Length: 149
Image 1 (cartoon, rainbow, N blue to C red):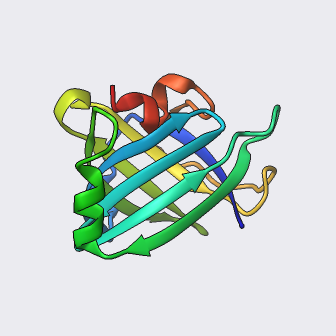
Image 2: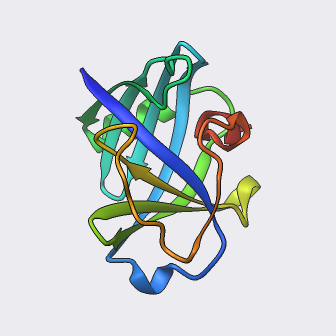
């Protein structure tokens, strides 16, 4: 079992010129129950199924399992997912000793840009780049499973 400890921020400035990789992503959900989120993600030529547990009260981490599946299978499963799909471009942006994943949303969420950083501990220190804005960690309206609506 893996643990996901991440913090999420709105993006307020230019970040693309610092990006080292760009990935086109579409994702949909088989379950959005807060106790068990099950997501299918097609990212470039790869597909993944991800299962996420509930956030522990007062903590940022949660259990997470992610498995690569054949791309054809990912596309087929996406056809039976709940209504609403997320379409975004992910930019991989290194900064100091960390990597930020910056998602630029398209379609119904056009204009929204959110950066995430995965940490190894809840109290891990990281430097914030100038383009990082308000922290939205834990705010339901910025969770991808809710943005699909």
